[in-house]
Length: 258
Image (cartoon, rainbow, N blue to C red; front, top):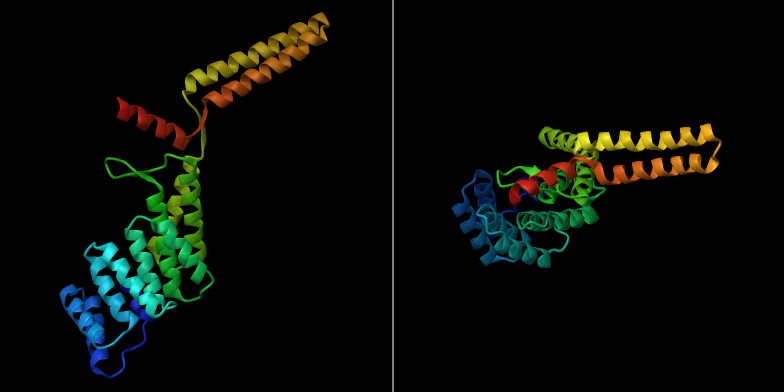
């Protein structure tokens, strides 16, 4: 949350700037009460977006994301292009459960920025997009329950890696997520035993008709065997072939109903 303050210029001499500087130092040190007092005092002496951002950061750290969002929006009204206000708003949106909206806004503004701080916030927001896209189980595990979730997580992971941030944990998380996506998309038979047996039966029936037609010189029987075997195999594939995420999601749903 405080990484964005690296983008702020050093305070200039003056009463308000002195309070703002002390508020910033307290915020970075984790002294939220002192930070709140100093930023509010600075805000009483001047109109500056970073005083609002500072108060917003304290509120966000205390879990009051709606109040924090209002502070960031006030800062943006004073300075619409101020990166601290923009990044603060994105953090509040993530805390509010709408990381996709936050990522979309940051992409519009900073997609091509070479600044490492801005790229870090973009990557971090995409990480939150992946977390919020998946379903959280009762034992606090993130799982896939739809194809859209798998697609969103793949896009998030690839974007994090493309941003090439120097944060090893973000990169490792993106690689793990891509591995989870690959596993989720793997095809499998469900239930495997029944599906394989039916596939063998369908193929055997088709081959039998083709063989009988060939021995009898009956082209119609041969064609019927080919078409029937292919149709039966198609039905079996549609009915019993599932991606791994679907199989696991169906099993979890059955377990919850049970």
